Length: 183
Image 1 (spheres, rainbow, N blue to C red):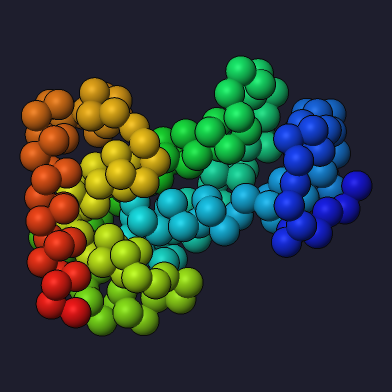
Image 2: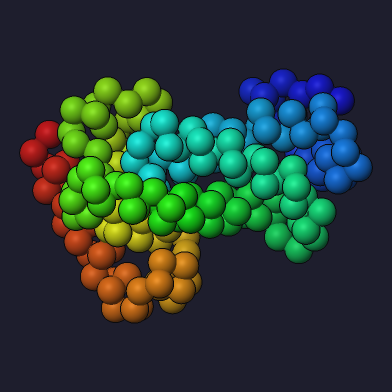
């Protein structure tokens, strides 16, 4: 079943596609991919703050979805499960890249600079400011404010104290407010 990626999809149709993907249907998988790739890429870009790495992480997400779709049990919405997989992979990707990033740039400045954020395709408004945030502040902000995670969940995901998560969120908000007022 081929779907128009711009057409709104019902939960029933999406569940049918998921069932087909669980049975190995590659066309159904392509339809799910087309429906979700932009949002998955957006989340990866917000968390990783690098277009190339976000594209790589997005591809890794969909490889994992293909391999782990059987683990989706339907107790939550598919998008909730998918964005959880995406968050975990993007965070893991940042951790893998950290060794290399620390050699090239300081840990504190591992967000994009203003010009890179402005040149980034597909980003506008707040997203251009979010990707400029330092890594920890950006990850906490995206997980809390955009994805709706609780600080306790973020602390576990990122291996930090709950108070650190709250402090990084506050820092991100302050920087975003400052940058927004200066634009």
